[in-house]
Length: 112
Length: 113
Image (cartoon, rainbow over all chains, first blue to last red; front, side):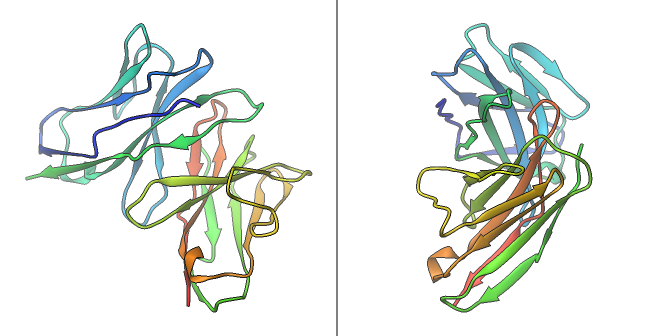
């Protein structure tokens, strides 16, 4: 079971790029890395998923080094509405049963 | 993506009673899960809801306390049985997509008095 470690909190200012790093030293070969965003009183929302190198979508980028022992979620030009908790999740993608352990999450505060 | 709804959104219950939470997905999903989240804390997986068979429970959670049904690919229920104040929490349902990314419902906020 791959355990994840993230910073408890981060502060940023509007317009800045925010990078949140997640450590997962014992990631398995079949594990994918997925990031979720959660606002208060809502369920988590899927942001991005990757296996290796770089993945990018309309809201974020995910950087995964060759050893896959960590990953970095990059949020370009954050706004106040990006204030949320961000979770890094590591687990298998197959249907034989996902090991889905949410870590502590990173509480991002975006300031004006 | 899938849209997931839960009912009720919140409830206040008396100790010793049971509450059934419903989860409805607007499209077929491969897997459905139930989580618990204490305010300000991370999510803890309770179980995987399997269609047509018994749910798969995580360590620390048992069927007698949290019976789960999944009669079809788009619907599941979680019952919190014989409730105590320690069961006060937010209960979240999720469904997995093609790449096993999860789509979450808004949660059910349960308070047990």
